[in-house]
Image (cartoon, rainbow, N blue to C red):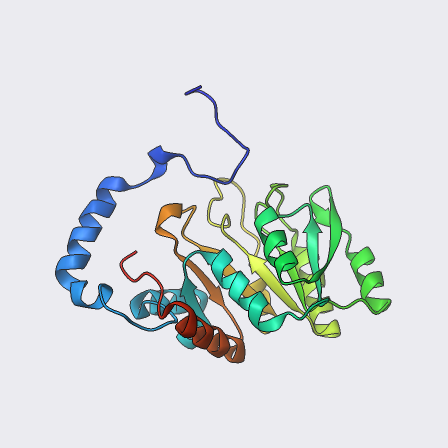
Length: 241
């Protein structure tokens, strides 16, 4: 079975882990920053990492929160914002764990089938016109799970236009975005319109899933609420990772 590449789950192979480099990093971190990473800290996450991400995404660091994987942050967001029966739009099919989180929040899910890797924007527009407006529209625009497709630029632009017109937020999940080996990347939805997009991602596919480092970029008011919720729930995330 060693010659088999499994496509059943988004799990990186063990040989991709930079184990020796992480050993060296762990030694250096403990020697130079041990007092910081072994102590309690901000519920929003380790400040140097938040500052790095804020520069990368050109946002204020107080809009960023780091958690034990991005799914934990999505669960927190749902707990804080969704009421029973609130509508959430999703691609169909989509990542099963997110569906579990939305269903646990007792949201009303509405799926839109992917056709040749793209959603039917006309169907979405008609649904909105009929009065079914979501609180959130969850999408995986880059290397969609499980479809593997990439959302085209016209579709990204139109989805943002609809979000602005009908006043809903897009949740953009991008764990695979930086695993591109050919072709040119489309601009992230967050890059196109940070005012209507919640951006979530993680280092699970880039470094290691076991380290459990995810992050979310939110509007200021939601970021403050999420940070307070995290503080009351687990005080702070894992700084050592």
